[in-house]
Image (cartoon, rainbow, N blue to C red; front, side, top):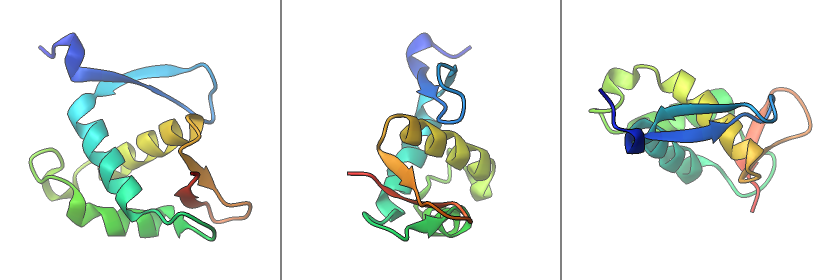
Length: 100
């Protein structure tokens, strides 16, 4: 059974006020990988390009063969957008970049 400190609360950019508790280790690994690959300015990276770039940075123990990386990428993306750390460009497809 996970200990309470093994989980972290995340927010959702598209659902303000919604909080979810997720695995801290996987969240942290994905956050570090995502921030490492995102540029600091527009046009940014598409979500697919960001995923392709960050997959080699993920620890195999947490994401064996990249398993569940797409879900975790979206969860971390929406949390970082809610916190103002990551922004998306003005047009489709969604392109992500670091806010500050």
